[in-house]
Image 1 (cartoon, one colour):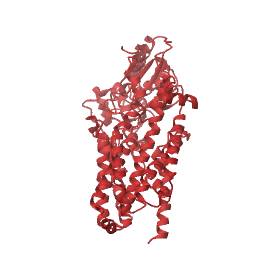
Image 2: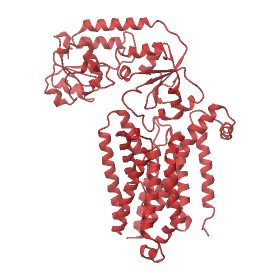
Image 3: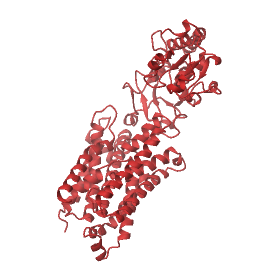
Image 4: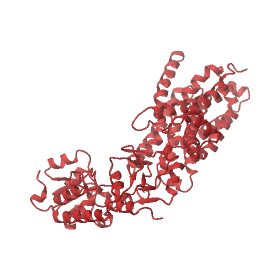
Length: 330
Length: 260
C-alpha cells in the first residue's frame, strides 16, 4: 500500500543508532562496552548516572522536540495546503516561548512547575488558532505566511521588551536560551513535565490525519466526500498547538525542522499528508538528535545552541523550497 | 589627570555602579557623597545598609553632569566610554580596578585596590586602617593546608577554575579547587557522577535570581544532589559580587567550613 514500506522502519532504526551514538559522547570518555553495560544495568553507579541521567535524557529531549515539530509541521502543511507552513515560520514557537518566558519572569512558575508547559501551550494554541482563522478568511498562501511572519515579529518584539527589562545578565542569558532553543542539561524531570502534552498533541494529529489526505482534493471536494472541515481545523490546531507548546517548554523555540523533515518525506509517501505524519516526526527527531550531537562535538568556546544549528541548516532549505514553488506555481 | 587627593578632598562624589558604591560608602564621609548608583541598595551590594537615604542617579552622562560632581567613581558604570567622556568634561574619574589576588603589593591585589581608592577619595588614612584590618583578618586565618577539594556553584550552573578570584579565595581558605580547567565553565556534570568534592561552595543562591536559569546545569538532578549534602558552604552574593575587603567574609566562611 505505502509506496515505500521501508521508510518508517529505517527511520526507527536510524533513530536508535543516533540515540545510542549520542550516549557515547560526553566529557567523560566512555567506551561502547561501558555504555552498553550501563544500558543493561550492570555498570558502576557513575556510568549508570552518566548514561541514564545525563546523556540519554538530553538525546531523548532532542528526539521528542524534533518529533513534535516534525509532526506539527506536516499536519499544518496538510491543513493549510502550503509546504511552507511550520510552527517556527508561522510564529507559533515564538509565541509559545514568549508565554513560557513571561510565566517564568513574572513568577507564575513558582506556583507549580506545570505552569511552564501550560503557558507555552497556551501561547502555541493562540498562535495556531489565529493562523487557522486567517486561513479560513484568505485563500492566499502568501498572505498566510505573511501573517505568520507578523505574528513572529510581534512575539519577537515582546521578547525584546522582556530582554530590555531584564533585571540582570543571568536572566538575560536565560531568556536568550528560550529564543535560541537548546536541550543542554535537560533531565528526566524536564521531559516528564512536557511529555503528557507532547503525547496528547501527537496522538490528536495522528488520529485526525486521515482528514488531511481528503483536504489535498481541495476544501470543497473534501467536504463533498464527507470531511467535517470545522472539526478537522479545530483538531489539527489543537494537536499542533499542544505538541509545539510542549516542545517549546522542553527546549525553547527551535525553527525549521518542521519544514525540512516533511519536505524530504513527502515524495517518499506519495504526497499523502496522513502518511507523512509518522515519517516526518521520526525524521525531524533524527535531525535534531544528530544536530545536538554536532552541537556537542563542535569545539566552540561556549556551546552552540541547538536552535541556532537547526536554523543554519533549515533556513536555506526554506528559501530553496520557496523558490521551487515560485518556479512551479504563480 | 592628577588624582584629587593631591589637591583637596573631593566633596561632590558620584558613583556609577554598585562596585564603586562599596568603596565610596566605606571610605568617604557621607558629606562627600552626592549620589550613588541605583543598585547601591540591592541585595548584592555589601554596604546596602549604609546606602539607605543616599540619593541615587542612573549612570547616564546627562543625569550625572547636571549634578556637577567633582569626582566620578566607577568600575563598569556608564559603559566603556564613560571614563573618557567625563575626563573630557573636566571631571576626574576614579577607576575601581579589577581585583585578581587576595593579597600582595602588586597591582590588582585587594589591599592595593583599597589604598588606591582611599587615596582617590581623599581618605588615605582610612584606607591604611582598612588595609591593616584586612591583613590582620587574613593573618588570623593562619597557614591552612587542608587537603579538601571545593566546588564553586552558582544558580547559573557555572563553576570557576584557576585564574579567578574565586579560586584565590579557595586557596586563601586552604581549599583545593575541584575544578581544574581555568576560567568560568558549566558545572562538570559527568565528572560529578564519579567524584564528589569535599565542600560545595554555593554562591548567589540567595540573591540575584530567585529561580535558576531554565537551562542551567544547576537545575540538573546530578547538580542538585550536590546542594543537598551537609558539606555546603553558602556564600552571600554580596561577599563576592565585586572585588573588595568584603571578600574576606567569604574566605572566612570557607575556612570555617560547612556548618553541619
